[in-house]
Image (cartoon, rainbow, N blue to C red; front, side, top):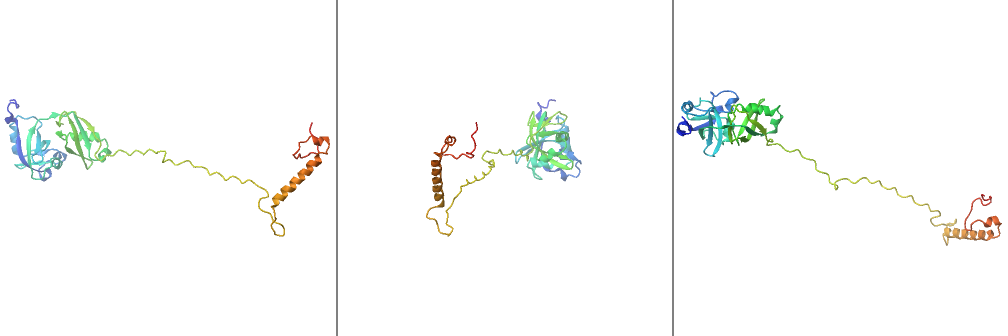
Length: 280
């Protein structure tokens, strides 16, 4: 019988009160109970009589918040009227203990691509995180875009966002070859680039301090005094200069009567060694 022509005979829809799977002592042990829901035995009887797709997949709907996700079933050992969910799934659905949730069967396409985003960069520190995720996803029956799943590894729990799924917003990951891609973790920060140093910030090159110029030596500076301590009427320098000028005049007058060899010398200059014969 074609289920598309008889929707009433192939549709499972029921409301249950939900509780965390940890409340059920009879639940299966291990990580699998953290990825699937646990339903009452009556649900199995109803599903067995329907023409449904396998594996059994379901759509969970929170009527209070209109949140929707998808899941698989692990066991049918819950009390009648109750359903047990992984705690992280209840958080995704904004469900509290005892809230009413709608459950209906669903048929999902096989996933070909999923993009994941770890909450913490600590997940990147584990050895080969991509292989760990691919292994962990085998324990899930389906994934829904916008959900947050739990990955346990080496006694630690890592939360992973489902950023994108293809070919649809909810996909089956049972016996399928699904490509896994990563988005940067939520707490990831880009390394700070060093600020470019502007010319204004650069320290000017050290300028060697110029040594002060040597003072030109000037002889006979200052004022002169007599030996008896009285100041001269005129500076001693002026007297010395006048005496020198007087001597030059006397030498100049005497040079006019000198020999012919002396007359060849330039006037106004003192020639050291004038008594020697000029070079030939």
